[in-house]
Length: 129
Length: 501
Image 1 (cartoon, rainbow over the protein chains, first blue to last red):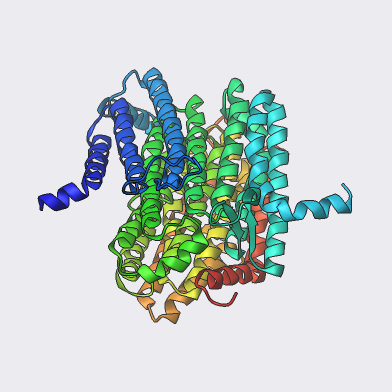
Image 2: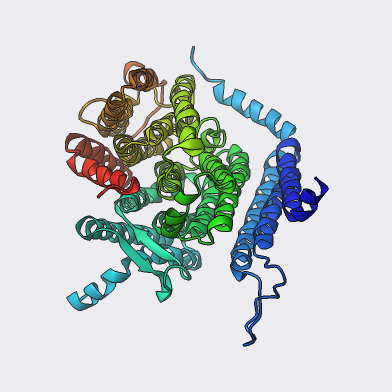
C-alpha cells in the first residue's frame, strides 16, 4: 500500500490539490477565495501535465548535440499556454470582484444573494395578477 | 482583386477564417471610437461569413480539407481539419455574427456606456475568433486554448450589461467560475488521453483510442471531457450559469452567445464522443444510454416547465435554450446516423430561432426598455413588425410546420421511432406542447392586452428590424426547403460515425 503511494506520489499530490481547489470553490462564500480555489485547482492540472513529461534519468530538453535522454518538452510547452490562460482568468475574475464590490458593497456570497433577492423583488413590483 | 490573387488565397482560407478576426480584435481596440469599431467589426464578420461559405462549398464538393498551420506537418504542427460537420458550424457561427453586427450599433449605443463601445466590439471579435478556432482546429489542446479565448471574451460580453443591471457582474462572475471548471476538466481529459496515446492530433487520437476501449485512463479521460463539455454547453443539471448570464448580458451579446457559443460546445462533444472515443460497447457506450439520454429528457421537460413560470422574457428564452440543448443532446445520445443528423440539424436550426428571438427582444429593449411580460403588453399594435418577428420565432421554437423547428423535431421523432423508442417520441411531443404555453403567454400579453396608459412606443429602427427579419425569413426558408440543411447534416453525421460520406 505504502509502495503504491510512494511510486505514484505525483498523482496523489495532483489529486490532493485538485480536491482542495474544488472544495474552496464550492465551500467558500468569499469571492476572492473562490478565485484562489480556482487557481489551486488549475495548478493541480499543471503538475499533472508536467509530471507526465518526466522521463526517468532524463535531463532538461536542451539541444546540446550530444546523445542524451531528456524529458518530453511538449507538456511543458502546453502548460506554458495553460498558465497564461490561468493568469488571464484570475485577472478577469478579480476585476469582476472589484466591480461587484463597487456595485454591491460586499464580496460575500450570502450578502450579495440578499441584495439580488431585493433586486428581484423590485423587478416584480409592477407585476400584474 | 484579380482572379489570380483570389485563387492564391483560397488554399489559405482555413487559416484566414480564424486569423482575420483574431488580428482584427487588437486593431479594433486601437481604433477606440465606437462607430468606427462597429463598422470594422461588421466588415470582419462579413468577411468571416464569406470565408466560411466558400469553405463549406469546397468541403461539399471535394471532401475534407486538411491545412497545416505554418507549414508544419501534422504530428508536430497544429493542423486545421474541415469536414461537413465543422463547415456547417463555421457557417452558423459567422452567419449569426454577420446578422448581429449590423444590428448592434443602435442597440449597443442604448445599452452600454459610450466609453466601453470599442472594448465591447473588441471582446466580440475575440469571441468570434475563439468560436471559429474551436470549430476548425484538428488539435485537442488547441481546442482548449480557443475555448478559453471564447470563454474569457464571453464573460466580458456578459458583464457589459452592468450599465443596466448590476446583476450582470455576478452573472459574469459565476459564469467565469463554472466555465473555468468546465474548461479545466476538459484539459485534464485531454492530458490523460495524451498520456496513453502520445498525441494531441484528433485524427491520430481517433486511430489510437479505439484500441484502448478497456483502458482505465481512457475511461477517466472520457468522463472528464463529457462533464467538462457538459458544463460548457449547459447540459441539465450543469446549466445553472446560463439563465442569469443570458438575462443580464446586453441584447446583442445574448443574441450572439445564445445562438453560437453553446452550439460550438455541442460540436466539440460530438467530435470527441464519436470521432475520438467512438464507443461501440462497454462503459462509454453505456454512458450515452444511461447518463446523456435521461439528462437530456429531464432537461427538456424541467427547463420548459421552468420557462413557463418566468416573468422576464429574456430569462424565459434562456430556460428554453436549456431545453433545446436537451433536444440536441438527445440526438447525440441515440448514437445513430438518424440521431446525429437530427442533433446537427437542430444545432443549425436552433441558432436561427434563438438568434431571431433575442434580436426581436433587443428591439423591444431599445424602444420600451423593459423585456418583462409587462413590457410587451399591447406591443402587437405598437411594434407590429417586431412582434410579428417574435411570434414567428416562437412558432419555430414550438415546432410548427413551415418553420425550421418543425424540421428538427420531425427528424428527432423519426429517429426515436426508428429505434422503436416511442416513449421518447412522446416526451419530445409533450415538451413541445409545453412550449406552446410560454409562447402563448407572450402572444397573449402582446396582442390581447392593452398597452399601459400614456406609453408611446415607435417601431424599432430599420437597422435593427432588417437583421431580425433576415433571421426570421431564414427560419421560414430553411423550414420550407430543408433539403440543403438535411443533406449537410446527414453527410456530417455519416462522417462522424465513420461511414462513407
